[in-house]
Image (cartoon, rainbow, N blue to C red):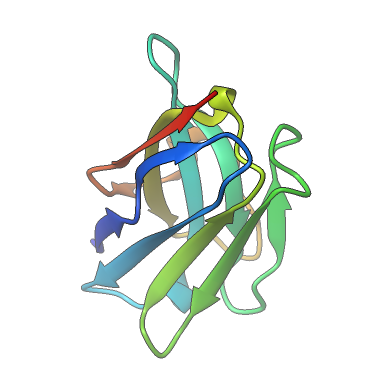
Length: 125
């Protein structure tokens, strides 16, 4: 079991940027598929971005592709989500998650077994 702690959320104006961080302990991020999900107010949790174990292949939800970038720093055992050109509809609690899979890049909640506590991102118009 890997422990995950997110940070970097906050209040930002539309068009602005944030970088979310997810620090892992009890496991190495390069050994897992790592992902960011988000839960907007009153809605279900949804997939945002993921990075595969080892080679670091990435995959994005259509709503964030071209605006968000997921990356991994193995030396810091940290996964990042760089969120640019933020929109009010990006407002949500953002969660980091880890999955023990092969080379797949899972996009479903159920594929991930360890989750962080979440960090709030609020985008004002």
